[in-house]
Image 1 (cartoon, rainbow, N blue to C red):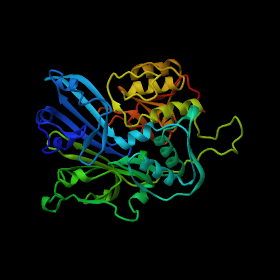
Image 2 (cartoon, helix red, strand yellow):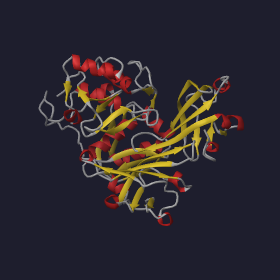
Image 3 (tube, rainbow, N blue to C red):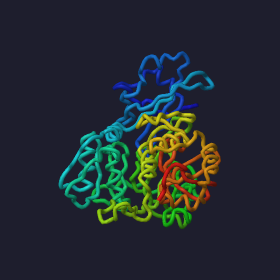
Image 4 (tube, one colour):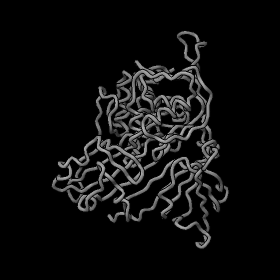
Length: 428
């Protein structure tokens, strides 16, 4: 495969650039930035005699930068390829990784959720963009059975007040999507014009933007654009994308994902969606009667199952991966292994393999309609050869594929064909 000019040369491993022979051994790769997980760089190195593997250049824990992105090697895999052995390397945001492993008792008094997120971002080397929020008497990182990392706490706080929280390019963003696109100061925006007349079309726009809206996404529309220009590499999640020339899809979108490939022509893929603010989900109040859960909530065992899946957002996808239930933070999953592992962490049994899991659900009489599963937190959604976990709000958490890893996705009746409950878990 022909590599895009100059991109491999931006890789810095353990503080130094790749030597010419190592750079030539890189046969594929991509940079992924998203609002659903961590900044991530994946690349594959040809290693016919395993010299690079033995050199320990790509050992886990080693620093790996790309351009101005500060990363740490979090996974590597030796696989066989058409030309012999290959080493597949995954590096993720260094600051994000530190937030994700920071655990233990932590209490900050008289701070707002935004201030808590700011202090944690700065403590672990991340920049910060945050919308002001109301001060609380105290905010604590949970311990015990519901133990959280700093990343978990930030995500929980964002959910409680209707914010989104994500890391992109070494910056932690914390606020409502509409605020992020209108915030005081500089908002980076990208106007793109499509026209059948090439002279009027934005230079580098490869094809008509792929735009979609549906009943499943409510008022939100989604778009995917493909760009081939030097500027395209500077687009980041949280930026404002403005489309012109695409009919009723003209408008303002928040960038949600950027894929920068090392290979082929180097076309950058940008995804974006209409900025819709999440509905705040405040924590339960003491007024709830003892022994009763408010309507719409999941049982503690179901919530433990869901949270275990959510905690793995950003992890690598590896077909056939095996994860021990004793390991609280594995590095790789396939779709069914994520479900099996998280179920075990919640005290429930599920077999391996998505087809086996669907058969098991049917055997236990726990099938439900896809429409019901989409509204049921912790339900399983099946498509041929795939399984995802419903978040109960039209979203999923799932080990998608090699390109995206473990991340949140969209739940819809057009995407999934069967659904059910984990037999050993107690739903509301």
